[in-house]
Length: 140
Image (cartoon, rainbow, N blue to C red; front, side, top):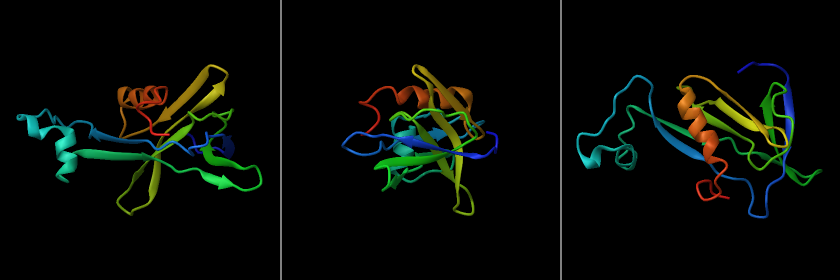
């Protein structure tokens, strides 16, 4: 993702507030196919066996009292319109700082953009972006 000037994007959310998105993914290059049913990703997460798993969550937007809306800082000018589907996924680095590894947002009425970087693969980023279109997957 380019580190151009920050762009304030006002996201207008429903009465229930901002969406909450989280994802648990295998690290790239690790074959974590389960040998037993209890060795799947969900079981590893529940047992806190997180050695080869990446835990992502969305960056929480800040509430703007003046506009009565939630606001996210997007990198670059790629996200141009407010949408409940706009989000950024973050990972906590070794210094416990938040790093944006993916941003997804509306560019036009029916056009969205998705920027991502390591440790996400293209298919992982696409799957996360696609899930934002299903209100049953994303908690509102």
